[in-house]
Length: 51
Length: 464
Image (tube, rainbow over all chains, first blue to last red; front, side, top):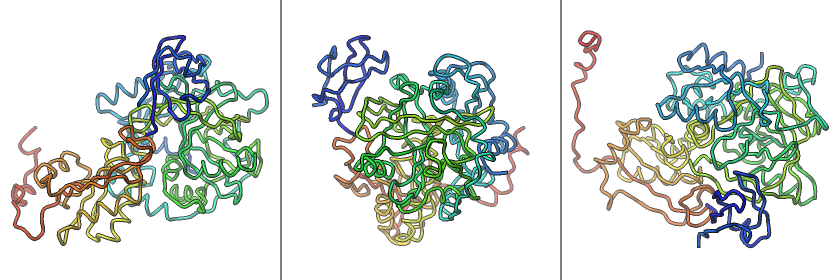
């Protein structure tokens, strides 16, 4: 599978994951599946990278 | 009468009433439908379900029924292919293979005759949120359309049908995830010309429509013709509302959602609970603008539950028959191929054969891999072992395999895009476990009760 990274939503604090190539350092807004908040990876409350 | 979802539901109700459940209590498509399915699955039950009173994504009564689990038992698929429900093992895969080789040219009918045009919604009235689109799993977050997407090749007009997840992201906004296969190829060619790719999501048709959608064929083959072959009659088509004859859509569908995949426009989509039983990650996926919704009166929205038996079996049966044919060219003694649910009907294959010389088990395993890139683990057994009985297969593995002798591993082969264990994208290992007895060396005999005694004993005479 594609490389992923875990991200914590800055609005609702819940965690989900995204495709690393698509979003990491790409200036593309993630979309929280729990609260629909849009935010960049650098705005996340926390990030866990796969490597 | 043309074969459609309704004719099949009628057949299922007649043939398998014990597995047919109508739910009258109101349900919310946000997790409630899938929670009911999960609770039944926890009890080992996979009934076909019709929910009669379902809310839409706005929390209002939708007016749609929702049907689900239509592929969750192989017996349902046997019926869909006009077999007796008892013929659910290899007979169903063989019937699929036979029918998927048939070609029936579709027929185009007038809109006034097309059931799917009984209600036509276009312009500002189009709103995806009026559908009872199901939110399946917690991290999905949003409702998804999970059935089949049809489209015409932008250069040749040849039709493709394939399964794709499409998020309900707003009134007329969706996004689609495509693996790099036929629809993706259509889209890339349309995008190179700066054009959108017209598509239609087919929500509710005869189950043969969706089984045929899983057939592996070359891009030159018109899949509407294959669908006709699998259903057993020409598919009836009708011009779409948005594109007219440029995009013909199934006339006997319950619901058609028309739209276009926009060139060079992407947005966030996912995570989505995939067939693997894991969430696929959020991706930067092509944007789809929805342009029209048409449906029948009293519509039945078909939801395929991804990540469970419903989608596993749907994908497994078409692959079994194809792999059987591939193996048969190399190993004529092959008897059966089963993609078990424990392997998501993608990653594991159990192959049985009548081995004539040592080494045929390995050859059978190798022959299986090119047919389907997601296949990782093959267990080959003798024909005294039922590949549809997982306990029997694992018994053969326990008693006929020495790991240092009978397991072969191939590294760095093309793999599936959604395998969560893969370290490299779409690349991974393959394993063949040869659980057959040796042909040239004496081997222990399997225990048995004399056949004549087994034949004359009727349990009813001894146990009430």
